[in-house]
Image (cartoon, rainbow, N blue to C red; front, side, top):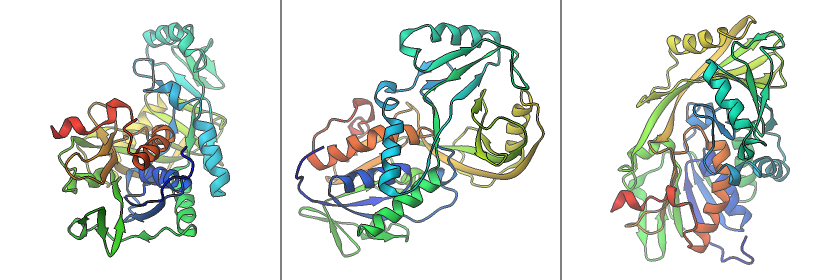
Length: 354
């Protein structure tokens, strides 16, 4: 981190995981930050379970930039728990349940590779407690969950207590005016404006041409007695404990779906999949739906608009926001303040404006 940085003033539009983590990273570097965020209880960040996992189960691969993210992710959020005076980090190993014999073979093979040894550990059994494992299972280590709503609430409290303005009105693009050395919005001058609007980007006149796809998803809140709450469970669907016999379960992926209305068939799909391996009775307590902001190449959008200097984007984190933000937000804060372009090449937006 820079010593004695020049203090600038930034406006962040959108206070989901991307905007909130960037805001506190800029504050940490002694910058001034204001927020415009129209609260939406059905936004992807408000609905998100916040699960993070270093393994991509589909092909038993390590997550993008795994070695940059997972050695530091627990310390990152633990340090912010101390700074924000709130608890929102949950450490839970994950039991990965195999669906077909070939999955068991692939996972065992990976667990013997040096790059995977700190992430995977085979479970040499066809049972775990009362759960039937037709093709064995494996432990995913370095996994956990961010209680996203508690985290976002703690961030807002911290920012407002430290002098940040928090505007809950919808952002008015017509009120944004270019100045010689920055941008003017609602009578306030800013050195830069960073848009972290999730699917709201589709209406942003500066960035709406970026290929962002809304991907609908569902999360259920369930009551399940007896199931061991020390772990998260995952096949393709997942279960993670909230305590007191309550669980979150998910998820679905529906490309192009903007709906926030829960549909019974989507809940039935998740419940039916869980019942294939989970032997206990379950009760549906709640059902939420929200579109995630996803990018076809599975890499976020970051960087300064090449034609409108001082306007930045931070979007497209999909279902990986809790892990990606712990690594990318500190990098982005440094990059924005210093003007260096040290972000990973895969996230740069320049290619979309050539």
